[in-house]
Image 1: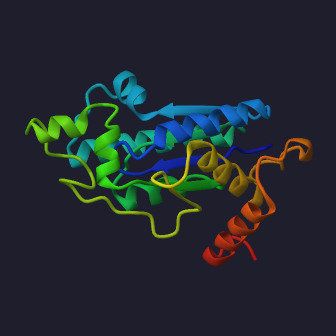
Image 2: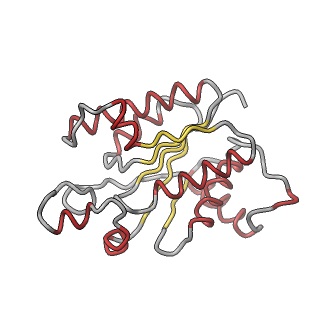
Length: 203
C-alpha cells in the first residue's frame, strides 16, 4: 500500500467515535495494515497543552490533527482521528490534505450520550460547570456526504466496525478480507455499494 487512508470519526461527545475507532484499529492491525490512532485527547494533552476549547483553539487543534494524518498517510500508514470536530469546514480542510479520506459520522441521540457519558461531561453540564458541549449548547454540523454513516443507538460496535472496513474495501483503500473468514454478508456488501454509488463515490 503506497499511501494510507485517513479515517476521521466525527460526532457529538459520547456518540461512540473512540470505541469504534479502536475497533477499526484492532481489525486493521490483525490484517497486517499499518495504522496509528491519533487519540484527540492524548494529542491535545501532549502536543497542545496550551489549547483550550475556544473556537480559535478548536480550529488549531483540528488543523494539527489533520497535518499529522497527512504526514502518516503519505508514508503508507493509515491514520485514525476520533474528534467531535463540530465544524464542517475543519473536516473538509482535513479531507483536502490527503488522497484517501474516509469521513465516518457516528450518531446517537442526546439521551443515549447522556447515559453513556464516559468522561462525565454531561453530568458536569447539568451541574452548570460547563456549557460548551457540541450538539447541546453549541452547534454541531453533521457531515453532508460522509462515506460511512453509523447509528450507535441501533448498531453494535462490531456492526459499525464492519461497515467501516467494508467501505474501505469497496473504495479500494484496503485489500478485501480473506474469504475464509468473511465478516459481512452479501446484503451488507450491497447496502454499502448502494450508499457509495448514491453519493457518487463509485459508479
